[in-house]
Image 1: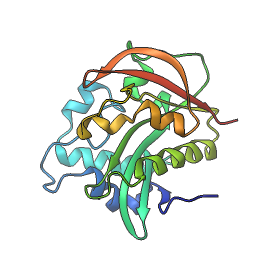
Image 2: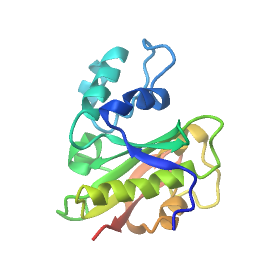
Image 3: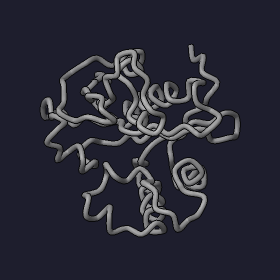
Length: 196
């Protein structure tokens, strides 16, 4: 039984305004990630202007597999999670620091964004559960995440976007490998959950 008060929806074209609410800057000419840093090769990512970034995400939302999912509290969008086939994510499909375990065409969850005033209410956990269902619904054999292994130490809010090992463990993921990647001084681990 689902006890979360949040509704999870795919980030499709008709929900692009909500994607922009969570990921986009107030000033459309400000440079922000738009959750493209892990998806695109660095040269392509750096070459995009702020408005081109928004346009790129809008194009991704129009594809059969959207670039992520959104969390809603009633009609209000409160969070975002990037989830897609790992093969579409340049930083992970070409990574020297995060290993490939096998040839399984896994999906990856790599980014959580919760709107200010909504943190600490379970939005990220609801998004992770939603990412599992989203990937399973598209036939993914397994879902991977690359959270920080912070133990009981606090993670800076701006660096918590990859999630924590404990959060992934609570969602049924298990440790699959160590990585040589770090974020904000914490090691990142490869967590995996089978979807079959």
